Image 1: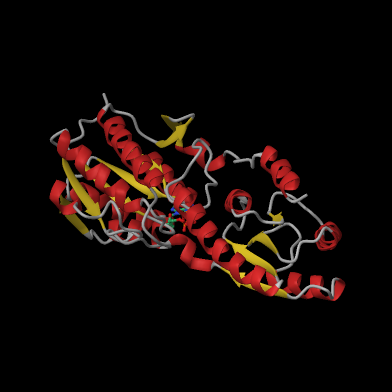
Image 2: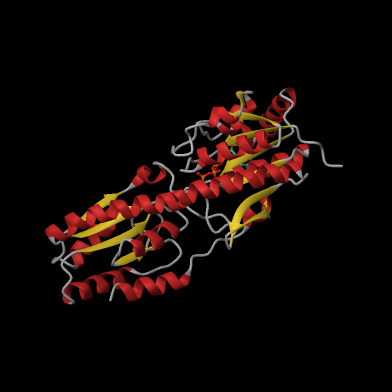
Length: 328
Ligand code: ATP
């Protein structure tokens, strides 16, 4: 018999992403709609261990749908990675009479939830919140769409100065293991070349392509580079290499960094967060546990947490071809 859920907790864990607040709001209001109590846990799993909880009602989440970051704060907790830490967290949840939790975070947060569920048979649900879009079982993670919009807005501005000075710009975007941001924002911003972790373009090909674009009459160019690109050189080393091999180019570097993680969430992320929050709570109420709520083909779906953690997300190879054609 699945346990009856009367009190649900919500926490944000790992790196923050735009849309986390909208997801908290959705979880809290879905609980209120179904007349069950909702508890907010501050500072991710560390706050769970320390019993840093707050009662939440529909009015405690007003005016946050449009805010970046997370009102519950996020944290990385080394202690939760130990059995002793998780025992403390379990004791705090039981003391506060919490029957299940929804964790909004990335694959590390899901790993923690999955282990916790296994150890204590405690009902858990995950909502994917990370700008990298690298989680299996959902076409979009919370914050990804907003990050794409932030990146193209920045590159549009860089393009103005690049074209005024006939410069080549290398723009580094987030994505240590996944090139989704680089590939999509690169196409959206009209980049000449896009370097991603999944694909080895090769230095020679990059130089050749830039040489060709100069010969084709392009006076300025933008190259978008994911942090973890396969070539293995950081963006400054790449600049040195290209300048040494193509003296006709003056290269400038722009590292977008953490600004990609902030800002008001896009409409897409707000709607996604609202849908995933409803499904997470209603799934717990139906006695389901140990799933990630995601979206596939515009339908809200459940994927076992373990699969969401282990599954591989692939880049869309058609986009590589589109990018190549666009840089003719
Ligand atoms: P991001 O996408 O920003 O990296 P994430 O959720 O993957 O987000 P992590 O720092 O990897 O971020 O994980 C968040 C927290 O989840 C950790 O600080 C830790 O408390 C918990 N966690 C991660 N891995 C484990 C694990 N193997 N066992 C128990 N808890 C874990």
